[in-house]
Amino acid sequence: MLSADKKYEEFAYVLDFLPRGKSVVIKGREGPVVQAIGEERLTLLELLAMENQNFDVGEKVKIGKEGREKIISVLGKLTFEELTSESKGTLPAVVENLVKANEARYVAYFNELQPLTPRLHGLELIPGIGKTFMKEIIAMREKQLFSSFEDIQNRVGLREPSKMIAKRIVEELSGGSRISLFVKR
Image (cartoon, rainbow, N blue to C red; front, side):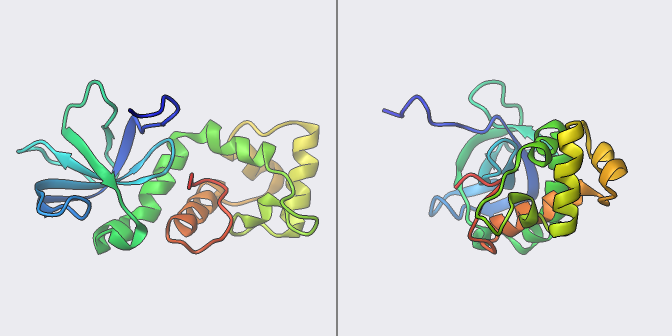
């Protein structure tokens, strides 16, 4: 019996489509395989697609229990190492689009991140944010919380915050960081 608090992804974004793929997760399983990243928990997933479907990189597909149109089942989780080179290559752009599509959720990080240790603030883990930008972000959010990436850009002078967050997420997915801000372990 699955515990009631187990969270499943409802949507995923396509990283790679292998019309005649072999599953990495389930040995011997073959068929149309999709590698994707979950929208909510940023889980790397292997999906079994329906026959005669096509997928575009970055396409958002329904993978929740109800209402699937192109996906038969979620085969399981993938590690970064198990991704195809195509998936690894498309990951940064797909993650950036995912971040932009969920802007409010990611802008909230700029409003809510706190110090992790006396010397390190959570904001500093986002590539491109050092002590100077961190102090500026904190000063600005104390006056008024940020409402969008554009708001952050205009008030703090941070260029393309969505790209910076996407870069951090890819870093966390690839195992390049000990501390996780965005990816649920």
